[in-house]
Length: 177
Image 1 (cartoon, rainbow, N blue to C red):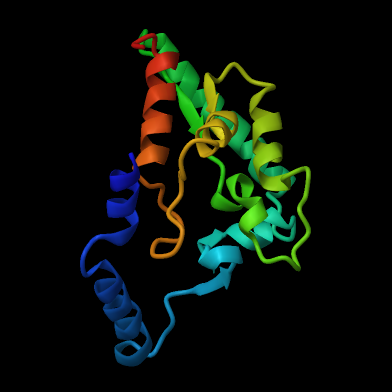
Image 2 (cartoon, rainbow, N blue to C red):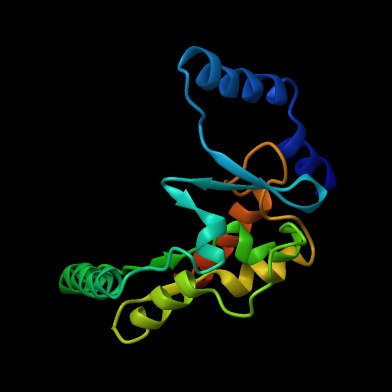
């Protein structure tokens, strides 16, 4: 497990290629790929237009009531579509990195006990018949043993342990484990 985690975060030339990617955006395309917040121990958290993790964590960019209501009806419709065809449908709700690694955020940021974006979508879906798999608890449990999000090089993607955790939960939910 230790070797696998090291390979996921330390593949040869990975740092070089990611550096080239960022420099291409900055110097060739005259743009930045996005803004990042640097947390404790070098953890990187994105604050990009399409991935507002930190402001979402802080509650500065909550989902609007219209968005959550629309999500409720869209996912209910998808659930009904698959139910009518006797096909099992499972919607996975995956928390962002700040929810799992809130203690790694910069020390100046408050550590909230609630997470407005995650909880707003979770709460509205609990009012429906949608089969939902909430991954917060399993990822927090896996975190006690292994790191589930990459620390430095990739800001958002899980590492192998995060994928393994989600895969196992999907299998359990589907009755395959």
